[in-house]
Image 1 (spheres, helix red, strand yellow):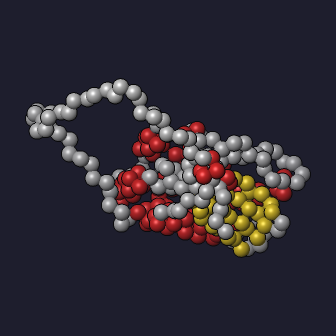
Image 2 (cartoon, rainbow, N blue to C red):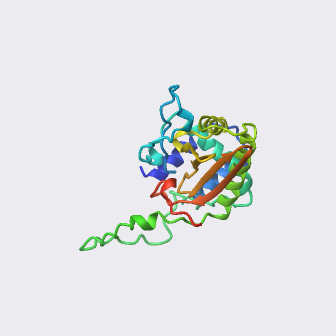
Length: 234
């Protein structure tokens, strides 16, 4: 089963009340392949001196299909819920009518031919090209604004936060460790990155918190690389 099929299957298992609007939003998300590679997992949480100021060393980012933790489905549900205002005007995809098995086909079935030689395989993509920042869709830009507002509002309640406090705020908002890079201290700020890519989406968020001020910047990343690997446009 492909990565996209597996994620779509997992979304289909989410149990929610039957709301037409939520179903339409989810269908639109699937159709547009919106905002998943995973991110580093949380570091050692044991109480150690200087833990809040230490840069967390992350392991290579796993693929979204490897995010099988119990928190993943609620996280997916959160993303779908927050995306509803952005996809409300996007029509749900229309499925083709299933043919009646009792009726004979109106068109002849084409004959299948096997080529003498297999088609040439495509060249692998240049790894450096995959690291270039990609353009976000209008829907993903809308989603980014929603995420930025809720994160900024939550961080205002923790003036001059430590990396540990920033992580706790993000987790309290429903973001999971597999999708949180950092947080880590940089000069007087605490920086972090959120990977919100699902179903072939491209949305990443780069954030920093200093005092009571937070800055959240969205950008696009290819599913082939991690959010931290992107060569950002400056």
